[in-house]
Length: 349
Ligand SMILES: [Zn+2]
Image (tube, rainbow, N blue to C red; front, side, top):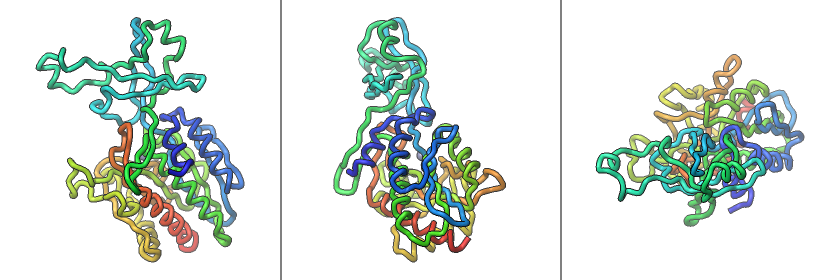
């Protein structure tokens, strides 16, 4: 696995705590951008090229996670969730609390063993409010010496290869797209007559309300915005093909509609440009129409007087879990299609 991809997957950055991912993105974008800045909101914006048209690429940096809410007198830590997490995935997981010094403190999300549950209790899903984190210290005083209320909590960092092109990692949503965005900028930097200003925006706080997409697109005010994010792959038990027909390894998804229309409804002329770019360049792709979930696109395309927006989604299994599975070939398709789309947009829009 390439170092940049691994570093992004292993890094920590729940919504509002993206500084470490931001450092990685600043370093990576500095290699080809003429300027890289951090705005008031915590978005990283790298600029490349000159020309009349302004193109924004957006990939969010934040991951879902938790925040320390309370430490009881016995040293157990209670937490709030940040972003969409189903409580059922939490019991027994290894997590890390990151303190002000940047130290990672390991902990286990504890719950009562099944042996001691009543029949009624065993039937009920355990709520995160009843779970606690055990870091191996036995009093509130001891715990508050190593961490503070308000510190972020992430799932144990992990990243690697399962088999051939099938990779796994924490925070694949959306670090794989941050990685893809860097690769897109690398490709675009080699095109001599690009004739456009490209702004690569690694956005903050997407998982809690598409916030960085909104503020960064207001600042950049682009003629066209291209969002890169993950989407739900349907090639696993429990998901019917009619719900998601997206498969790993079958190419990047061109998202046309999110959250049954409450999210982005990608304009028809943008859909056409993206489809033509994929077909003309023989880029593996799939079409994504989803009932639930949305991306920064929804905030960007309704910003100002409306911003023309397209969305590329990388099919991913088990998003918003401690580890997700994706196919490296789909990232390659995403990069190719992003570059082809941007070239077409610069000439046609
Ligand atoms: Zn995402």
